[in-house]
Length: 356
Ligand code: ADP
Image (cartoon, rainbow, N blue to C red):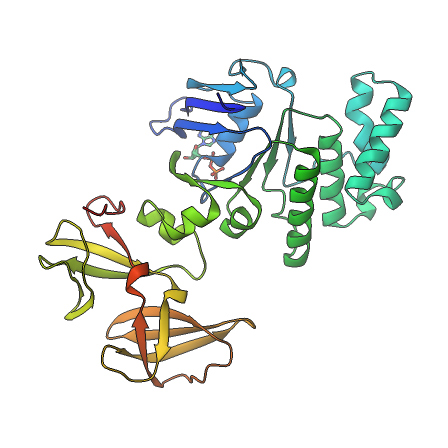
């Protein structure tokens, strides 16, 4: 049995036809860092509210360390929640904010002192203990909120978009700190975000959700390299994966427009499909026998890479290449598609087609 389990966990709000959460099925190990990622309206907040107990589940169960806590009141679940908006008390100092919960629980003075010191060290807040939140930056406030969460030593940390209010640099630093603290405490964490890059860089496993339903569960590498459906393929990874309308022919070749771009596909033939290929699996080459010809529409310089947008006939594609590649807008270029990296999805249900 997993440390955390969801069995068909579902939620439907009164007077709504749609399920906000549809039969979530998941098992988590102790110490795991799991990211739930999906676009707006996919059910992330609903899941958090059901896990904390602020909302009742309509069906299914939530097991935490062997105990069914589905119907327990929030305060008896031993879960710490960290919000996007920090939710600090403005009239209290950092120290008072961190110790507030422990005071309410009537912990001893010495215990509280030690705990505050311990948390302040972990979250780099030692110099700020006497400050009020209004004198802190967004990153510092979020670290106070995290300190307040860790002193509870909860069974589960729930992080609700904790990086969304921070600018890019702080987002990276704070994300790294969250992961570091998670590892040091051997905590178990569910991190909810709409930002796929945060999920990819921080989590052991990712759960991709859409319309209240789990689309795929896997390590960042599995999700990136072997997406189960077209939604996951497009949602994960930037720039968005290139998509081509194609057809699988009886001889195992893949045709896009009038061009055969791959051969030896062991799929059920004669069906319309979407072929998807990541920007790094296209390569600009010198004109050669099998190369395809496109024209450069625009170029984005990213420092470490160059993203070259081309039109291949009428099909727009993005090619990731080395930053010193010599390409100019309007130029004709030749390119190759790494056939082994082509992902094929059915046009019927957008699911990955299985090899025969
Ligand atoms: P996310 O957090 O991923 O943006 P939500 O959990 O907020 O998604 O929303 C999932 C679905 O549930 C949406 O269709 C939304 O309209 C609906 N929903 C969310 N909260 C409520 C609520 N309190 N009452 C009714 N419907 C809600």
